[in-house]
Image 1 (cartoon, helix red, strand yellow):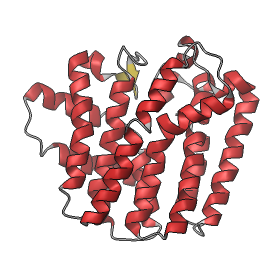
Image 2 (image 1 turned 120 degrees about the horizontal axis):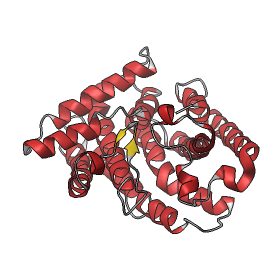
Image 3 (image 1 turned 90 degrees about the vertical axis):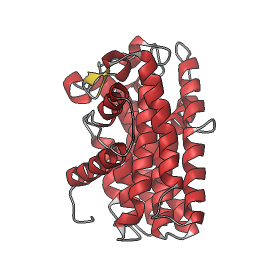
Image 4 (image 1 turned 120 degrees about the vertical axis):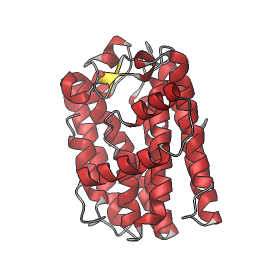
Amino acid sequence: MNNLSFEQKQQWVNEQLIHKAEQLNLPKPLREAVFYSINSGGKRLRPVLMVAAYGTFSNDYERIVDMVVALEMVHTYSLIHDDLPAMDDDDLRRGQPTIHRQFDEATAILVGDGLLTYAFQIISTSSKLEAEEKVYSISELSKASGFEGMIAGQYMDLKGEGEDLTVEQLSRIHRRKTGELIRTAVKVGAYLGGATPPQIESLDEYASHLGLIFQVQDDILDVTGDEDEIGKPVGSDASLDKSTYPRLLGLKGAINKRDEYMALANQALKDAHVENSQLKDFIRLFGNRSH
């Protein structure tokens, strides 16, 4: 797996997702909606990041298959719900109609709910993980996707529309809404791979900065990106009157803030004594991506 390109790892994740989805016994229309959601061309950054964290300490990649699939299902659920009319009200996701536009709002809600709960079913019934590993993985993933993570982040983000937030408040929102799942990808991957507690602590710091790098660059792309490349309308944050890093700091200031987080993430890898691992590639990938 270490020798595979990023694109090959993406394909591996896609194959595992489809394999798990095929095991579901569903009514045909609901099945179509599920497959639409997982076949919509996602970059699979979080599961591939988990693979990289795991691969820093172990080469037995079959052990992490179920956790990788569960993580991406939780992420996909969050996107489906974020796009709903009551949330961000987006018509496009990854260049395609969002689930509630392609099907209907009720179907989108149910597919999101189903993916979230199926993720924990996959972990709890995995034959590849020990009982203690399942407890740790479920605890970390449920915290990241629950009230202390994405739920609070999304709520704070919605309530922040039209408000003049500080950079600190904005960072707090994104640490929860975006960052918690990225932290889980790294922490759980490293834990399952056999990292020591001090290494996991340093890698958690790395992942925390990585999540902020991702969000700052996302805000930059909302100003400078190309709609065909980023798969959603440019300027959507401004149209919702959201506070963003470019809005608060200016475009140059946002770029400087992103670079600051990139330097901190690199330092955290050094502290974990894994500065030459594939995790370093994600700092460049998240910070320099064009879509």
